[in-house]
Image (cartoon, rainbow, N blue to C red; front, top):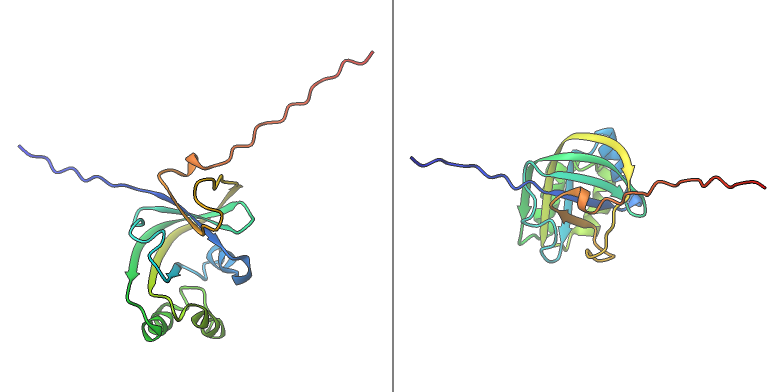
Length: 166
């Protein structure tokens, strides 16, 4: 008798955000429920993210402070300005974009060829922690890891030495 075994390969991700865009705050406030990434060439997390994965968010230069679960992923290739504008028009508010922001954002991404929309749920602020990005490249804005604990920086406790006074 054969048994069907469903194997889920859940991954953790780190999304590094540009503080100037204010997207991390919009995720926390619930104004941004879709994370998007736009590329000229396929880049992480392309084909490496799926429903059931967890994303940890941080602003560049800051510790991780938010996590969310992935419920859906949509990938787009062979993009052009028209398709990108349609995507922003359809999902802009869930991407955390106001109409004025949308035009500026469109100008920034209109020549990209690949896009990923990652639908989020269970967004939570968490106790901040740092990560070790060694091996991912200093300019990486997205990290795919099997388990966040593998790159979590654990601070060693500091012990005070009692000095003997003479």
